[in-house]
Image (cartoon, rainbow, N blue to C red):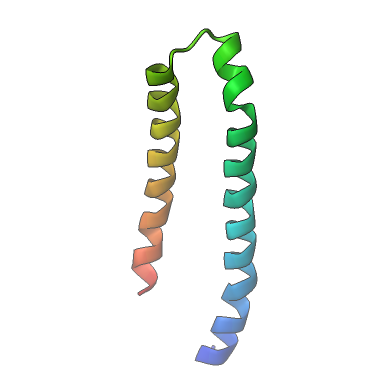
Length: 68
């Protein structure tokens, strides 16, 4: 497969991934306050939980380095 065709085929996949991550972050931001109130979480506990979630997203970025 030639390079130009590879680039054209990967762009839609990257776009869909970007949209999925954006929607995920948006939803987390919307439900953060009601979720913390329901679970009686302090600000520190809430920050630890959401930080752990976003650190996990960094693991998904590691395979991107394989394609360099």
